[in-house]
Image (cartoon, rainbow, N blue to C red; front, side, top):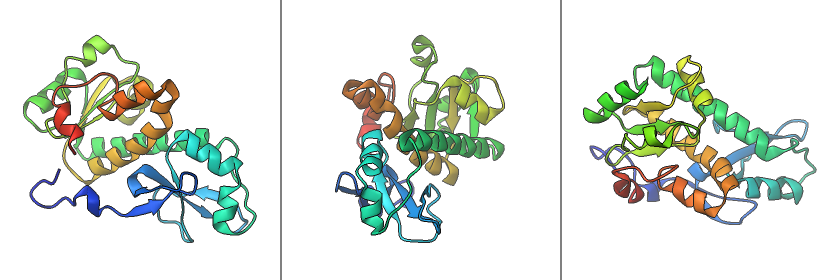
Length: 224
Protein backbone atom coordinates (compact mmCIF):
# COMPACT_ATOMS: atom_id res chain seq x y z
CA UNK A 1 0.00 0.00 0.00
CA UNK A 2 1.40 3.41 -0.91
CA UNK A 3 1.98 5.96 1.82
CA UNK A 4 1.99 9.63 0.93
CA UNK A 5 2.00 8.70 -2.72
CA UNK A 6 5.68 7.80 -2.57
CA UNK A 7 5.72 4.01 -2.63
CA UNK A 8 5.44 2.25 -5.95
CA UNK A 9 2.67 -0.18 -6.63
CA UNK A 10 3.69 -3.85 -6.60
CA UNK A 11 2.76 -4.08 -10.27
CA UNK A 12 5.63 -1.66 -11.03
CA UNK A 13 8.25 -3.83 -9.33
CA UNK A 14 10.91 -5.24 -11.66
CA UNK A 15 10.32 -8.85 -12.66
CA UNK A 16 12.68 -11.66 -13.59
CA UNK A 17 12.25 -15.22 -14.85
CA UNK A 18 13.22 -18.15 -12.63
CA UNK A 19 15.42 -20.69 -14.42
CA UNK A 20 13.91 -23.53 -12.38
CA UNK A 21 10.18 -22.85 -12.56
CA UNK A 22 10.07 -20.86 -15.79
CA UNK A 23 7.80 -18.35 -14.08
CA UNK A 24 8.24 -14.59 -14.25
CA UNK A 25 7.71 -12.83 -10.94
CA UNK A 26 8.84 -9.77 -8.92
CA UNK A 27 12.52 -9.78 -7.97
CA UNK A 28 11.61 -9.79 -4.28
CA UNK A 29 10.73 -13.48 -4.58
CA UNK A 30 13.93 -14.54 -6.34
CA UNK A 31 17.65 -14.72 -5.65
CA UNK A 32 20.22 -13.37 -8.13
CA UNK A 33 23.30 -15.40 -8.98
CA UNK A 34 26.29 -14.56 -11.15
CA UNK A 35 29.11 -16.68 -12.57
CA UNK A 36 32.53 -15.72 -11.22
CA UNK A 37 35.85 -15.56 -13.09
CA UNK A 38 36.57 -19.22 -12.29
CA UNK A 39 33.12 -20.34 -13.45
CA UNK A 40 31.79 -20.68 -9.92
CA UNK A 41 28.14 -19.80 -9.24
CA UNK A 42 27.96 -17.05 -6.62
CA UNK A 43 24.83 -15.69 -4.90
CA UNK A 44 24.38 -11.92 -5.17
CA UNK A 45 21.90 -10.94 -2.47
CA UNK A 46 22.76 -7.25 -2.77
CA UNK A 47 22.31 -7.45 -6.55
CA UNK A 48 25.50 -5.49 -7.15
CA UNK A 49 27.98 -8.02 -8.53
CA UNK A 50 28.98 -7.54 -12.19
CA UNK A 51 27.89 -10.00 -14.81
CA UNK A 52 24.67 -11.35 -16.25
CA UNK A 53 22.20 -12.23 -13.53
CA UNK A 54 20.74 -15.72 -13.19
CA UNK A 55 17.54 -15.72 -11.16
CA UNK A 56 16.07 -18.54 -9.07
CA UNK A 57 12.94 -18.52 -6.92
CA UNK A 58 13.75 -18.37 -3.22
CA UNK A 59 12.46 -21.85 -2.38
CA UNK A 60 14.28 -25.07 -1.57
CA UNK A 61 12.58 -26.88 -4.43
CA UNK A 62 13.66 -24.31 -7.03
CA UNK A 63 17.24 -24.08 -5.76
CA UNK A 64 17.57 -27.86 -5.58
CA UNK A 65 16.27 -28.24 -9.11
CA UNK A 66 18.55 -25.52 -10.49
CA UNK A 67 21.59 -27.09 -8.84
CA UNK A 68 20.89 -30.74 -9.60
CA UNK A 69 19.50 -30.41 -13.12
CA UNK A 70 22.35 -28.34 -14.51
CA UNK A 71 20.16 -25.29 -15.01
CA UNK A 72 22.87 -22.83 -13.96
CA UNK A 73 25.16 -24.18 -16.68
CA UNK A 74 22.34 -23.99 -19.22
CA UNK A 75 21.60 -20.37 -18.29
CA UNK A 76 25.29 -19.44 -18.35
CA UNK A 77 25.87 -21.43 -21.54
CA UNK A 78 29.07 -22.78 -20.00
CA UNK A 79 30.19 -25.37 -17.42
CA UNK A 80 29.89 -23.99 -13.89
CA UNK A 81 30.57 -25.06 -10.31
CA UNK A 82 27.62 -24.88 -7.91
CA UNK A 83 28.11 -24.71 -4.11
CA UNK A 84 27.22 -27.86 -2.17
CA UNK A 85 23.78 -27.89 -0.51
CA UNK A 86 22.75 -24.61 -2.12
CA UNK A 87 19.40 -24.26 -0.25
CA UNK A 88 21.09 -24.56 3.16
CA UNK A 89 23.78 -22.07 2.12
CA UNK A 90 21.19 -19.55 0.96
CA UNK A 91 19.18 -19.95 4.17
CA UNK A 92 22.29 -19.21 6.24
CA UNK A 93 23.17 -16.19 4.12
CA UNK A 94 19.66 -14.77 4.25
CA UNK A 95 19.41 -15.23 8.02
CA UNK A 96 22.68 -13.37 8.44
CA UNK A 97 21.54 -10.61 6.09
CA UNK A 98 18.19 -10.12 7.84
CA UNK A 99 19.91 -10.02 11.25
CA UNK A 100 22.42 -7.44 9.99
CA UNK A 101 19.69 -5.22 8.55
CA UNK A 102 17.63 -5.36 11.76
CA UNK A 103 20.77 -4.50 13.72
CA UNK A 104 21.38 -1.48 11.50
CA UNK A 105 17.76 -0.41 11.98
CA UNK A 106 18.22 -0.72 15.76
CA UNK A 107 21.33 1.46 15.68
CA UNK A 108 19.44 4.12 13.72
CA UNK A 109 16.58 4.10 16.22
CA UNK A 110 14.15 2.40 13.83
CA UNK A 111 13.84 -0.89 15.76
CA UNK A 112 12.98 -1.88 19.32
CA UNK A 113 12.82 -5.18 21.21
CA UNK A 114 10.94 -6.37 24.26
CA UNK A 115 7.24 -6.84 24.87
CA UNK A 116 6.56 -3.49 26.56
CA UNK A 117 8.52 -1.40 24.04
CA UNK A 118 6.90 -3.16 21.11
CA UNK A 119 3.46 -2.77 22.68
CA UNK A 120 4.13 0.94 23.16
CA UNK A 121 5.20 1.41 19.52
CA UNK A 122 2.15 -0.48 18.31
CA UNK A 123 -0.12 1.61 20.53
CA UNK A 124 1.37 4.86 19.21
CA UNK A 125 1.24 3.53 15.63
CA UNK A 126 4.98 3.99 15.27
CA UNK A 127 5.52 0.38 14.21
CA UNK A 128 5.32 -0.73 10.59
CA UNK A 129 6.50 -4.31 11.14
CA UNK A 130 5.91 -6.73 14.00
CA UNK A 131 8.60 -9.39 14.39
CA UNK A 132 8.10 -12.36 16.70
CA UNK A 133 10.33 -15.37 17.30
CA UNK A 134 9.14 -18.58 15.70
CA UNK A 135 9.96 -20.51 18.87
CA UNK A 136 8.40 -18.00 21.26
CA UNK A 137 5.31 -18.69 23.35
CA UNK A 138 2.19 -18.64 21.18
CA UNK A 139 0.19 -17.34 24.12
CA UNK A 140 2.53 -14.42 24.60
CA UNK A 141 2.76 -13.63 20.89
CA UNK A 142 -1.02 -13.59 20.49
CA UNK A 143 -1.21 -10.53 22.76
CA UNK A 144 0.37 -8.29 20.11
CA UNK A 145 -1.17 -7.37 16.77
CA UNK A 146 0.31 -6.73 13.33
CA UNK A 147 0.27 -2.98 12.59
CA UNK A 148 -2.69 -1.89 10.49
CA UNK A 149 -1.57 -2.11 6.88
CA UNK A 150 1.85 -3.32 8.04
CA UNK A 151 3.84 -6.54 7.92
CA UNK A 152 4.51 -9.53 10.14
CA UNK A 153 7.73 -11.58 10.28
CA UNK A 154 7.55 -14.78 12.27
CA UNK A 155 10.18 -17.21 10.99
CA UNK A 156 13.32 -16.12 12.84
CA UNK A 157 14.25 -17.91 16.06
CA UNK A 158 14.57 -16.10 19.39
CA UNK A 159 18.31 -16.72 19.28
CA UNK A 160 18.65 -15.27 15.76
CA UNK A 161 16.55 -12.23 16.63
CA UNK A 162 18.62 -11.79 19.79
CA UNK A 163 21.77 -11.39 17.70
CA UNK A 164 20.30 -8.30 16.06
CA UNK A 165 19.80 -6.66 19.45
CA UNK A 166 22.91 -7.86 21.25
CA UNK A 167 20.94 -10.16 23.53
CA UNK A 168 20.79 -13.89 24.14
CA UNK A 169 17.17 -14.11 23.01
CA UNK A 170 14.44 -11.78 21.75
CA UNK A 171 10.81 -12.80 21.31
CA UNK A 172 9.15 -9.52 20.31
CA UNK A 173 10.53 -6.73 18.10
CA UNK A 174 9.19 -3.97 15.90
CA UNK A 175 10.42 -1.81 13.04
CA UNK A 176 9.39 1.74 12.31
CA UNK A 177 9.13 3.42 8.93
CA UNK A 178 12.21 3.88 6.77
CA UNK A 179 14.30 2.46 3.96
CA UNK A 180 15.90 -0.22 6.12
CA UNK A 181 12.48 -1.52 7.09
CA UNK A 182 11.58 -2.09 3.44
CA UNK A 183 14.83 -4.00 2.94
CA UNK A 184 14.25 -6.14 6.03
CA UNK A 185 10.80 -7.07 4.78
CA UNK A 186 12.11 -7.97 1.31
CA UNK A 187 14.96 -10.14 2.61
CA UNK A 188 12.73 -11.77 5.21
CA UNK A 189 10.32 -12.62 2.39
CA UNK A 190 13.10 -14.48 0.60
CA UNK A 191 14.01 -16.29 3.80
CA UNK A 192 10.39 -17.27 4.33
CA UNK A 193 10.44 -19.11 1.02
CA UNK A 194 13.25 -21.31 2.31
CA UNK A 195 11.84 -21.93 5.77
CA UNK A 196 8.07 -22.17 5.81
CA UNK A 197 7.82 -24.85 3.13
CA UNK A 198 9.71 -27.23 5.41
CA UNK A 199 6.55 -27.73 7.47
CA UNK A 200 4.16 -28.27 4.58
CA UNK A 201 1.57 -26.42 2.58
CA UNK A 202 -0.68 -25.63 5.54
CA UNK A 203 2.11 -23.88 7.41
CA UNK A 204 3.16 -22.11 4.24
CA UNK A 205 -0.31 -20.62 3.92
CA UNK A 206 -0.17 -19.53 7.53
CA UNK A 207 3.18 -17.84 7.05
CA UNK A 208 1.87 -15.90 4.06
CA UNK A 209 -0.85 -14.58 6.34
CA UNK A 210 1.65 -13.49 8.94
CA UNK A 211 3.57 -16.45 10.27
CA UNK A 212 2.29 -18.73 13.01
CA UNK A 213 -1.35 -17.83 13.52
CA UNK A 214 -3.28 -14.89 12.15
CA UNK A 215 -2.60 -11.56 13.84
CA UNK A 216 -5.19 -8.82 14.28
CA UNK A 217 -5.18 -6.41 11.37
CA UNK A 218 -3.81 -9.13 9.10
CA UNK A 219 -6.78 -8.82 6.75
CA UNK A 220 -5.40 -5.51 5.48
CA UNK A 221 -1.94 -6.99 5.11
CA UNK A 222 -3.31 -9.71 2.84
CA UNK A 223 -4.72 -7.05 0.52
CA UNK A 224 -1.26 -5.59 -0.12
